[in-house]
Image 1: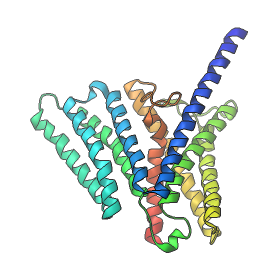
Image 2: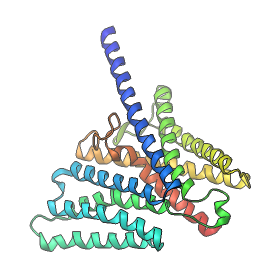
Image 3: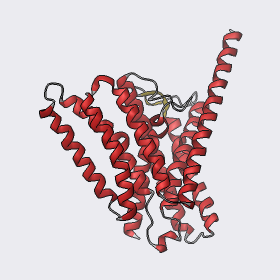
Image 4: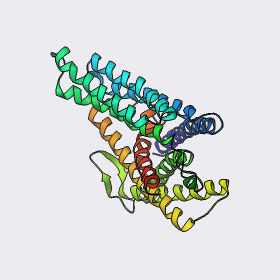
Length: 310
């Protein structure tokens, strides 16, 4: 019994070590591209988003295996290849990234539907639906990250750090802190609060872990507020903007947890453990950014509303 427990302990230590090394490399890559965004050009961070889109689309199509046809795979991958650069370049130079993204989505829809006629025998409503899912998740959702990367806003709002720099930080700080606190709460409080969050989708997730994730999201937002505003040297109207940050952190954390469940459901439906192996101990690119995709949606919508109202 002792030897089995010891081997299990050693295996867990090795897994944690691998996860730590892999996760650290991921953080270093994020920081490098963020610094390039600041010192060079916004398009540098779009390059990282483009890599996420290509890797994520490849992982989705591979996970679906025979659920899509070769023609559908080609159209979906072409959508990933074209849409992110088109969105980034048009948003950067003419401010029409959202419009171009919608045009690409329309073209994707027409191309997939045309297969009902061109490839009638092999095309079904079911594999068309899977193909559309593989395009929306992740490429279409990542377009919101591209748009977030190019938000400038007014000079008045810029004084309160409400531009693309803090939006990117929001997305990539709140989600990891939320995940970390969810893990800590779940691991150490599970025996006292064992209620499952979604037992049929992800049996290991507990309600107490979800609460930890929400706490982590708000904590990450608070850390970001004080760290970033200290860096720019302005804490004007803290009574207004700190609660705004906390509310966005709360909803971004909830979106992160929902994104985790979405990917867990997809993997359960296709009977796989991980979407890929590019990040040892974590899985694939989609396994790393699943919650981030949905947190991006919340952050983009929240900051868009702020810019419209303010």
